[in-house]
Image (tube, rainbow, N blue to C red; front, side, top):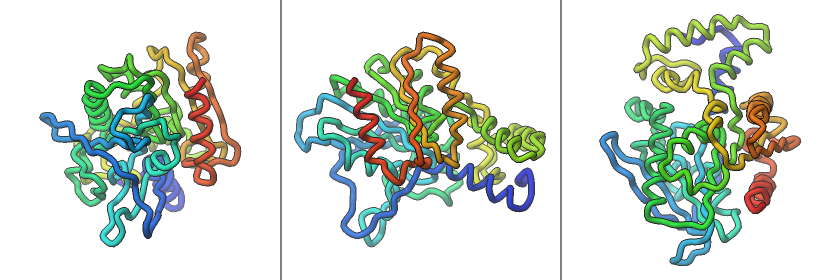
Length: 317
């Protein structure tokens, strides 16, 4: 089944999906590269997951604080793409975090399941099958739990960006080690499902929302397909992600929550983050901070250093 409508709307919808899913890539060349990091690997019956530790102090000892970063979705490694001429052809937001975080924070970055460090797997249909909600959550949970069994910190914080922010509460809830997490930060992830986001897109533009339901039915009828695509992504990826509601996962979370949202985010609407804030406020017993940053886009590209400052100030309270 093709895209639900024709013409310019299809193009815009594909861009919306792509931009929601793809973590902001910072194209840097020349001598720029990641600082030194350790690579760990978790293996199980489903394959392997690499995860990366940046020791910020440069010392052999473990720091007091750890930030665990869940990157947005894309068909590349969570660190970016390794280059043939330069060490790295592109970076994810993990680059800015490991570069600009205060020195006392170590940084842990889980990769996607069965993806090699720095790999672009956009043309590999088998590896595309590991981009489902289940695989994204399981790969993050297994690698974080394995790491925390052997590495102790005074304070541990979990941050998710874009789709990483969407899976953030489920990752937290599924962790065996969740008692060690002090606070969580939803960065441009919102609280709506992809289904709701797409339906709202249609409603706002006076389009036929029944076409979204028609596509969703086709996805469910072909839920394992890697050859049928909707807005640039295989049906198998959509099958368990489409109606996943991140907001519901927060019901049993009782640690402080920070929601950050750019006012000019065209990829994940402000309304999705406001919905999450109001949903959590309705419980009355949640420690929730909502900050909307004026003139900021989805990846805060005009001043990500300010975002880091805001996050660190909030974590320090």
